[in-house]
Image (cartoon, rainbow, N blue to C red; front, side):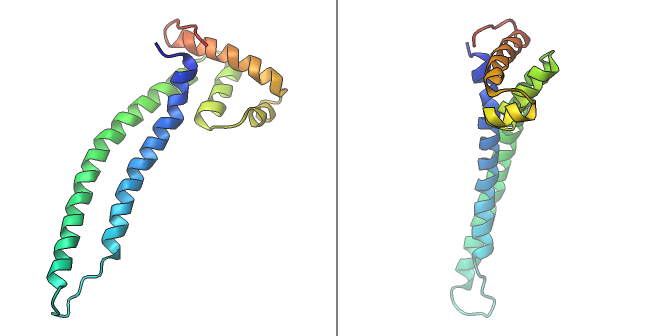
Length: 141
């Protein structure tokens, strides 16, 4: 069983996976656009056209695969965000959002919510408890 902290950390990992899926397609498209097709009737032009065609097919296939995976990841990420938003205490919910969605440091969070960094650590513990309750009574921190 995952702790609330581990569960919330998924948000940034999922975001990175989505970014990587997008980068994979972009790299293939860049490779395709860098290939020069010769239309001057010189030998070799047909081979280049075939190479571009193969790349185009790979791009379409990869886009289809990535779309399904991307939708799955977005659904999981939305579930994590829903837990954060469901934390009843607005200050604690904001703390979790700043930490797990926006990736802010403890010092940045302390400045944002106008409190001492040491107090942010305590609030974070309380926020994780509330997130655990939202997740179904799970109280591990």
